[in-house]
Image 1 (tube, rainbow, N blue to C red):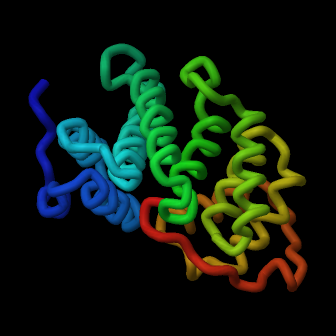
Image 2: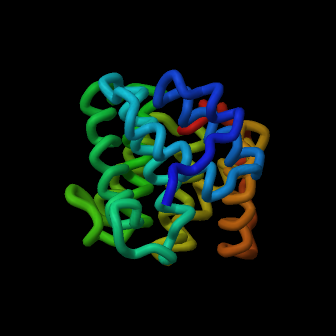
Length: 214
């Protein structure tokens, strides 16, 4: 199969892995991305340097986005979810080692989410328990970042702990204007999963938003 075609928005951002990842995230946020877009971004990012924390995070994010799209449809080969999840973990760990504070701990947030949502046998350094601990730690250190609250709520629901998801989700619902389009959809999906959600007024006070790709 030939290399996937880059759409203009991705081609214009091809000078660095981070710029490419941000361009792909913009498409995802707007609901305009396709599997071909994610594949094209991945095909390009593997040729770009990943020596900075930002570029290493971008490589992890793009690999994760492609694995997310492929899901269970492709279980074999270099571009299978198995290989892509391992790659996302590898480069997220590299980014965190280079600069753990990059975009308010974006690589750590990605790792926590990955450890909860991906099967443990696809990962080298974490599992769902470690993922929850990571995300809880991020919320404790930086509770005002909406993405931290959202990913923690998502993780709790993924593990069947809807009761624990209520508090972080309530904080998210009080800050919807700080979310990207795809994050709003995720928050609403979690809200439907929990059902019968009553948020105290204090929880609906609006914290700040997240940078693209976080």
